[in-house]
Length: 119
Image (cartoon, rainbow, N blue to C red; front, side, top):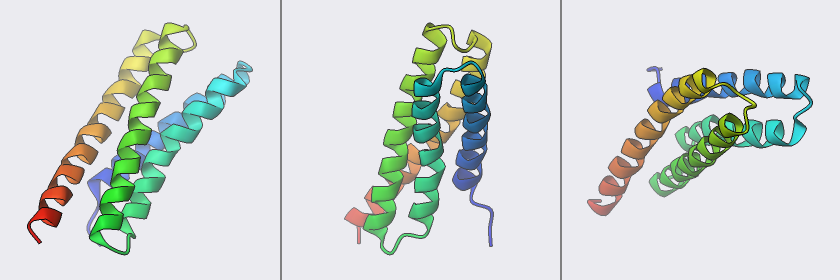
């Protein structure tokens, strides 16, 4: 099976979020930890769901959910940075990783929409 770049990128990002969440829990920041963990790991979970989708519409719907979860994760990352729970350096590293995932998901959604229109 060929490597799926978005599956790999979203999984690696989820790992980064798990490590961040663990650090937040160590600092007893449970609410923000849970929020970022939920949205940040949901991106890859929905990508995997899309890959196993039963139809092209199902694929697109799951990828759209991944995109929405990525946007939500970006919100939580900004909040963590601005409230000083993470450093600007940590934010920049995670934001760069997330930006790469977002761009790839957006291209996939756009491409799949065009394919649905033409078929």
